[in-house]
Length: 228
Image (tube, rainbow, N blue to C red; front, top):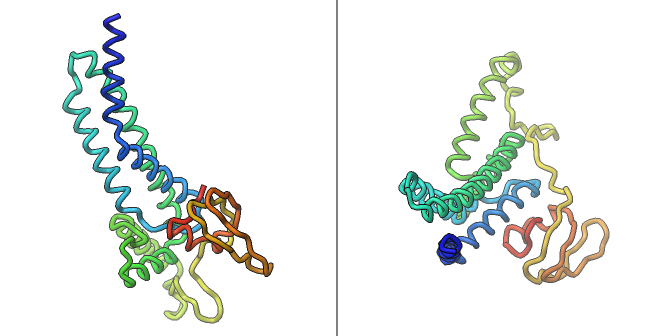
């Protein structure tokens, strides 16, 4: 009976510690992960969400390290719960970063141009984080040097550029902006014109639609729609 009372006390303490802020962080990170995996283009770096989550992970790691080895059964049981929650956050962060790195590897020059445009415009949420930007530029520099030493060095200087757009041919790979995505409406958007059909649809809060990414990109970036 005493053991059951102890378990009830531990669960009650954990329930108190699970503040709405932690729940919101987990939900926001999950949404970022899903959206990044589904959207054809890379989305802006959610620095607020990531900073809060990384700080939470850091505090939880310190808690586990400080209390590991305690002989108190209540403390050990609580640590198991904390470690389980910690692994869930770490899994989402890793999945989120892998999805973004996959896009960087697939479309480096396009993403670099988009990031530079967002930085020049003074956007508060640039496309890439500082670490991602360093990865992209370093990776692209090594790749360009490899191509030049392997075969590009044998071409005339005018044909050695990897980002050439002259002659009606664009050398920069782009994501498929017309790929279909599922979106959920978080706010009333109103009429959405369907390109090429001359018709439109009325998108209201709570609706779920499958549409072209190019048609809803700006509403997703504004937070009126979310990719699911």
